[in-house]
Amino acid sequence: MSGAPRRVFITGMGVVSPHGHDPNTMFERVYAGESAVRGVEVEEAAWHPDLIPLAPADFDPAEVIPRSRRMLMSRAAQFAVVAAEQALEGAGLLQDGQGPADAGVFIGCSLGGSEAIEDAYRLLYGKGRRPRPMTVPLTMANAPTAHISMGLGMRGPTMTYSMACASSAAAIGEAFRAIRDGYADRILAGGAEAMLSGSTVATWHLLRVLATGHPDGFHASSRPFDAARTGMVLGEGAAVLMLENEEAAARRGVEPLGEIVGYGAASDAHKLTEPHGEGQVQAMRAALGDAGLKPEAVAYVNAHATGTPAGDVVEIAALKETFGDHARALQISSTKAVHGHLIGCAGALESLITVQALAKGRLPPTANLTDPDPLCDLDCIPLQGREAPDAEYAISNSFAFGGSNAVLVFRRAGGRV
Amino acid sequence: MTPTEFLTELLIEKFDVPRESIRSDADLASLGIDSLSMIELVFDVEDEFDIQFPEDVEFKTLGEAVALIEQLIAEQGG
View 1 (tube, each protein chain N blue to C red):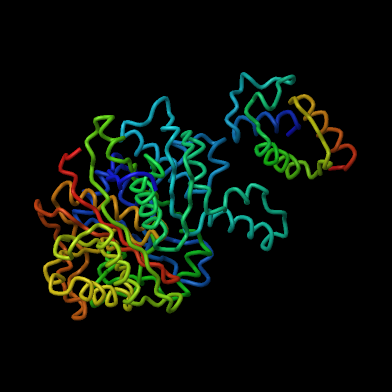
View 2 (view 1 turned 90 degrees about the vertical axis):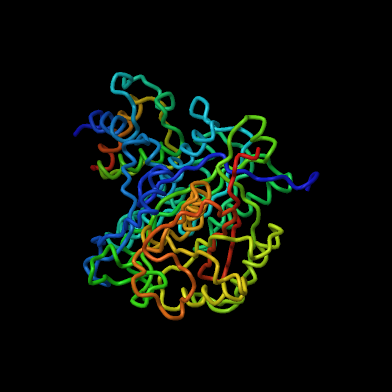
């Protein structure tokens, strides 16, 4: 560490998401409670229903990435470079198609190129033919990170974090620390995930964690905190934040979009897929301690809540334990009701939503929350978004299979650079 | 499809090479075909013509590639 801790500002954002491919559109659709979930026909459907509720990103790479580059990139990497360019452009850091050479790239990704693994296995085991050699660089989990760095000429440290659903929250948190503690001035941090391919969806379905349909339609399948919730809905996309230390941002005279003020990580050491409150409480306390905040300072929680019967209840209990009496005053929402669970990109997408919620003074709702589970008896902002112009601090929770928990603390910018 | 036709289409369709820069004496590296792309290109050619390139094979230009493919088709009866 060199010198005193530095403040870490968010100066740009980029996204490819089930709700469109720019941060503002994405936020407004999430705020309106518009569901991007629909019934999708998934190939090789022998092991699951014909239609599965999913939240795909309607994204045609042909429009933005030349074929010769696309050939070397998995879908997740394609999402990542598009989101990265947006964030750099928004931050005013894109010059002649290149980013700042001193910047690092920290990206969370759980599964890398799932469709490329699938293609290789289909050739090898299905057709008895040789798989493509390009499978190797397409499937590696750090490919999205690498393509951002290569394509945009960013030569700082490139780190890839892979801890399932907490991957991108950890990537952002570790980037925050690296900048705060003086190891880097600028890092592009976020996540990328594209795992809506046949075998992946089939195995998630067989694990019995995916939501089934709902009488109101597939759009209502993802129901965090609701009594009728049946499981999670998988989504896909990429989301990144341009993070800069206070001085670097001030030198450029940019208006920050928000600030990261704390990060905590802790592990359940319990079960692979069963959430455990203790690790969640420990991560939230660590994040608040890192930010030097009392629990009462937090106005909004973007919950991890995926809509599984077990997980949402555990998170509510963990929030009660962490925040004590203040838990009843928290305004909580799980935006996964409308964008699904983006796994390795979940924390990053939800960070973009949380930053904008504070900046715009509007808290997005938990859509589909028509009949709250009695065990989820906190204020989970049912159905309608809310004005909250005074909300200054918010946390975003990400709790993963494998028991990794990561919590980020955000502060409204308020033009203080 | 002849080897020339196939390679021409492949370079245009898959590797974004402009049609006007495709000539028999064009250096493949100068057309943007790096080592990784070359592996992909060889795979496509092998699958199309049912031939196998030797391990130590080298070719630089489009013309050399076409000559080699024609030779391999003749030798391997592809």
